[in-house]
Image (cartoon, rainbow, N blue to C red; front, side, top):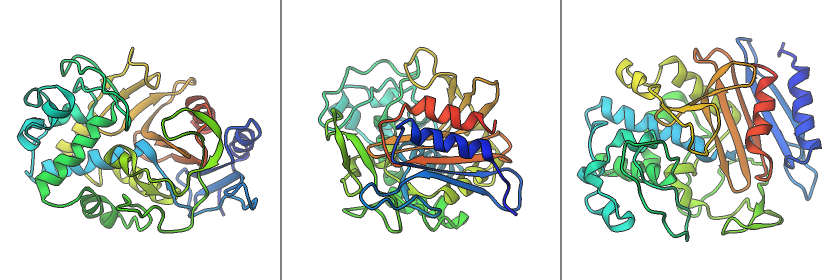
Length: 328
């Protein structure tokens, strides 16, 4: 029999009641034979269809955990090293587009956001880079470059390498990086936003079919709660990486003073977060137009919670901290 979790269900109901989004799902695996799955709110504002298991949704920045895993597996195959410079694989790219020196930035610094490169959105003027290695600056640019390096090192695409190294070995049939004009391959909730294309405030509107291909390696993937459970469990338990690369994955840098998520330390695509009650979780979150997600668990991978909201106007940190605190 599935475990019961009334506190978690109440938390889901409260998120929707507080106006945090159209609908929310959560899947908990806690050493039981069957997972607990709960929903609140709707998948479609027009029809009132409720959210349900198996829905595909954009996972936003949790994409970085997949990319970090692929890079580390390529390092294990001696296709690259973590100390390789950006200039080795992408000569002139950082210099031309960002005004920085690619010969001073290593692959590891891209993955743990200590490259000194700034964050940037499409159409936004790029801020001035800093010297690498000085501090944590969360930046999509880092993972855009990492994705380009994967392509150069393999002669393949990032989507194909995610499939080869992660999705196929784990049987993640509902997890993929969309290519071209493709968005969702399977059943999905409608995705809603209060942001326009430039990130400015606007009325709630449907962005399910929006072209978010620019997010790419930094946040473009699609998955389901069940697939994210399988991936995160394998990652935390060490099933995807050899010991040396597993140690690299969980070697963290402080994020204090960066203006990013409080009470965190960042590894190579994953991070740790300390909850108000004292528990420390591992995994990651994802925020992209129309969708917010969290996938975290204990360090041993024995208790995991994955959740998604099909809206982007909630208080991202408060919402999910409250949700995860019911179980950790």
